[in-house]
Length: 333
Image (cartoon, rainbow, N blue to C red; front, side):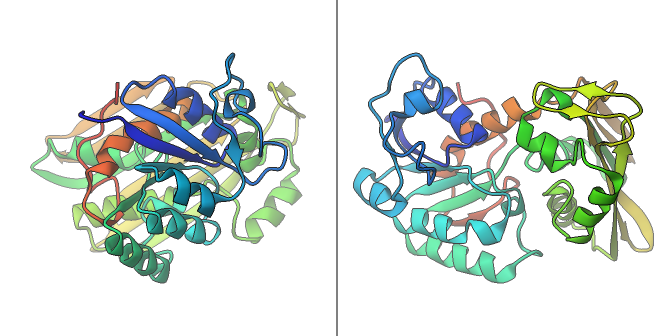
């Protein structure tokens, strides 16, 4: 790599802060700035904000447009929201500044079915400025989409794929524990589910990515989300889950093509999980299966996915891209 990649961190929540701590250890990149809207962070040295022993001489800025214009980063690592409607202007701002973007926004991983208008607007601006944007992470981004697709490359034919992910959220960050409903009542779980924004964001995108990439015509997709109830008191680093309250969720998607079920994604995320793992089973020629005992630790793996995508996106063709369009992912050491 002839020059260090100039990187701006956009968003300093738990994931963004972890990205900063990783980026400063990478010889191939240069962290040149950080942006966040939190008044408690703006104006402070980013080293202090993310808990480093030493200051970095980089002040957190609140005005993203001005910061992008002045610093002119090669790549922006974007970690602000899970939803397309919350990030469109942020992404367009980065693209108009001539920056490539790697984002943790789950809905951005495979956004075509969710919001075609968003996709067209982002793609047009990216092409106009000769840059690219991609959404990635561990899930979506690898465990339940890229990994099974990569495994399928060893099959001459594929009839059906079953993907399973079992996660102990008690070992994960507080926002994720809250996202799966840990500690709430069954009634509150139902209320949140009825609002239409509850459950793991991105599972639908993973299913659509696998179906679309393999060329399977989607006839029907069915999704269920059920609470997993705690049978005893469970204490995590951040909260207490009482017996009889919600420990997390069990989410499942089934996809049919040609009147046959060809894809199943099953996700269990709750505190107190026993035997966490990630698994893929392919009914194909030859049949293949893989099981990662203990599972892929999502907090760390999400950071890795974002940082390791930096050199890939910088060399990508302009436009809105997916991980399936980029080269094989590997560690950026």
